[in-house]
Image 1 (spheres, helix red, strand yellow):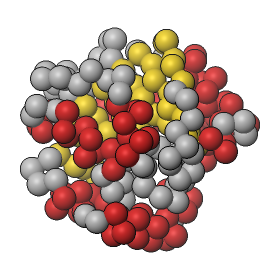
Image 2: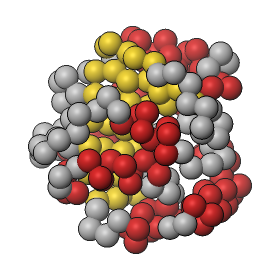
Image 3: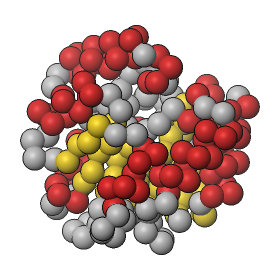
Length: 193
C-alpha cells in the first residue's frame, strides 16, 4: 500500500468515526521503531497487536518475527481488517475488541508481547482500567506491554490518569523520548507484567 493510500484510508476512517479512532494519521516509521526497539522479538514468542490500523507498526513486527503464525492483530474496524489481510496474506487478523483478547488464548499460552495503539485518553478512568486489565490478563508473566500517547495529551487529565494507571498495573515503566517525526508527536510507554 502506498503512503498516500494508507493516509487516505486512515483519514477516511477517522472522519467517519472520530470517537473511535483517536488519531488523524497512521503511526510513523519512527514511532513504530521506537515502540519495538526494546522488544527482543525472537523465534518462539507470540506478539499481539491491538489496533493495527493500516499496518504501519505491523509491517515492522512481521519483519522481526520468524513465523507469522506467532502474530495476532485485533482491530474493530472491518475495513482495516480487510485491507490488512490483503496486504499481509496468511497473517492472523481478527475483527474484535481488545476487551476480548483473552478469548483468543483460552486453550493456549498467552502472548509474550502486546503492542497497543489504542487512544487511551479518549476514555474515562473506569474505561481505561477495564480495558487495560482485559488486555493484560492473557499476557504471560514477565511479558511486555508497549503503547503510546500523543504528546499534546500527556498533561491533560486523561493522559495523567492513564500514566498513573500504567504505574499501578505494570512494572518497570519506561517512557521514551518524544518521537517528533509522528503526527502528532508521541511518547511510548513500555512495561512488564
